[in-house]
Structures are given as C-alpha cells and as structure tokens.
Length: 227
Length: 249
Image (cartoon, rainbow over all chains, first blue to last red; front, side):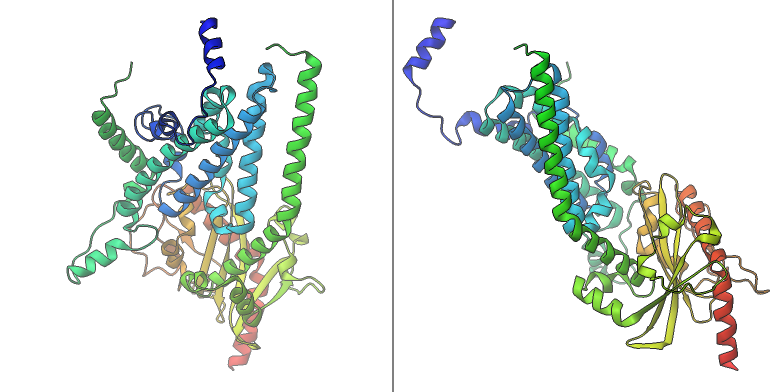
C-alpha cells in the first residue's frame, strides 16, 4: 500500500476540478440518497418544532446552512491542531459561537423572526447534523470539501423541513408564506364554498405525519432498508 | 496523535479567548441596534392594542416611531393610582418591576389620543405581565374611555409551546377579547376569563372568551395576568372613570 501511495504522489496528479464528480456527490448525496432527516433520521426535533409556517422555516434553514458550513470550514481548518482528547468540546465551542452569532444578528436585524424562532435557533447546537458532519467529515478532510459536505447536508435538511412546512402551513392555516391560498381558492367557487383547514397540522403531530409520509415515499423510491 | 497536557490546555485557553473576543465584539457592535429593535418592538406591541396588526406590519420603523410619537402619551402610576413624578413609562421595565413588592412597583400607562392632541383621549393602554406554562407572558390591554370596554389586546410570550400556548400571539385569539368588559353590573372588577376548550360561543357573556384547545394552562396564565394587573391599575382606572363621569355631567 505504501508503495502505491508513493507512486501516486510522485505522479503529481493534476488539481481536482472545482466541481469534480466526487465533489458534486458530496453535495448531492445528502439531498436524497443519504438525507440527514429521512435516511439518517437526525435533526427531527427542530424539524417538528419550527415547521408550522414557511417563513420561520426558511430563516431556520438559512441559519442551519450557515452554521453547518461555517463550523465545517472552521473545524476543517483547525483539524490538524485540535487535540483529539478534547475535540468534542472544541467542536461544541465553535458551533455554540456560530449559533450565538446567528441569534445575535437575528435579534438586531430581524427581531420579529428572532422572537418567533426563539429557542430553536439556540437549539441548532443540539442538532445532530452539525456535530455529526464535524465528527464524520470535517475532522478528516480539506476545507473546501468540508464546505461542500456541510452545504449538502444542510441543504438536505432544509428542503425536507421546507417541504414539511409547506404542507403544514397549507393544510393547517390555508396559506403559503402567509399568503392566504385557501381563501382565494374558496372565493373562486362561490361565497358558500369554504376550504377547511386542519388544526392537527398546526400541532407537532401534524409534522410527524407529514414527515412519516415523506420518509415512506422517499425510502420506497430509493429502496433503502434499515439494517 | 497524542498531545501533551500543556498543549491541550494552551489550545483550550487560546480557543476560549478567541471565541470570547468574537462574541463580545459582536455583542458590542450589534448592541445598539438590538436595543433599537427591542424599543421598536415594544412600541409595536403597545400600538397593537389599539390598531390592527396588518396596519402596523405595513409601516416602516420610522413610520412606527412617528405614529407612536404623535398618538401616544404616557405616565407612570403607583398601585394607588398616584402619578409618580420623574418616571418615564418607556423606561419602566415591567418584567423587573414584576419581581418587586406591589407597593414599590411602577406601573406605566400609555394614553392613545387623537393625532397631536393629548386631551382627546381615545383609549388607555395598560401593560400586563405574568407566567404562562413554561416562561413569562406579557401584553398590553387597551381600555376605551368608559374604562370598562376592552378596545384590544396584544399578547406575547417567551417560550410557550408552538401551535398551542404560543397561539396567544395570533390576531384571531387576541380579537376574542375586543369588546369584552372588565367590570360587572355592580361595578366589581371581574376581569376576563379565557375558558377551557375551544369553539364555543361566548358572545353573550361580557367576561368570558373562547379558550385555546390544548393550552389551558397558558390560558389560565393569561387570566391571572389580567386579573392581577387590572387589580394593580384599579385605583387609576376608578379615578379616570369618575373623572369621565363628572365630565359627562
């Protein structure tokens, strides 16, 4: 094996393309085939809590993308200096700092969102996706790859919570991004016609049901089986 | 790679200092903006008791400040309804006062009046503060000049359950209070009670409003908060009531 590696280094590989096949896979894998929520079943807590409406969900998704990408980058840059015995606490400190930054920025520039998301921004710290990517990827890979990996995972998380939020807001409140879709559709069918909303969708139970259905559909399509 | 203890400790110290500096720096830079955002939010909440949320949402921060400046006067009273000289209502932290004994507390009153004309009062707005299920809840209650009919209410919370207790922030829930009365026919303060369960019609009862399904404890928190704070303001309310009654004669 050592002979092989030496041979490879001597051969002097051309620099890997910015978006090589392997790197594209880093981003695309977590979107479907290895989705953090539907396949790995991580980050469920916040997926249930913040998804009653699209708008806060979008802010949450952006926050998570920021935290995962930046923490992956930071840890990857420091990976050769982090003492292995305290690596978890170092990761935690970095993630907690980033999350606090997000929370402070929201408080200053989007106070309404800050109020609405309240504890859930802080709880990004406990989102298993963040620490999971740091442990599994950023500690052993170069910064650019780590950014891609973090971006892919966070995006995989984001599109699922946005999908859940879409159905919950539409069904529960009859709206999408606060635009009263049900009201408009009902008015098309005359004054007596009214599309009913379902209160169940607003409660966390609704998120479980939607999430369960998404996982079911997705696993049927990808043929994924728990082993 | 096995590092020495010295290395680990040095690394941790450096990391802590760097992250600490980063955080305190951010807090220093963003602090004034956050204070502004909080002050603006308070004004929006106060105005929310007398004008609709959609109207406020359509205003820019500057418009909110201007509207607030030309429509809201304020005073601070004690539990006996006496004005406290030298205190500004906006400077009173209701949450901090909540921890003091009632006699020592300062109670701000916001007076909603015609644009630029302080003497033509439209309603009185009273801050509220109390405990929900998980954390603090607070709000602002507007009383019409008869000092009995609720003109509107805004409610907010720190950590109620989303979809359940957190629904007190919804306009639909807050609208249930509008038009209700806080005094009964014999003039006793009975406040307003949010009932258990949801979907019943309470339009015939001036002191009861429909509850929030699955959030009875938050509802009870709102009830206690209303009863407590209307009690604290009762002396002031009665004094205004008698003065308007005299004015009507």
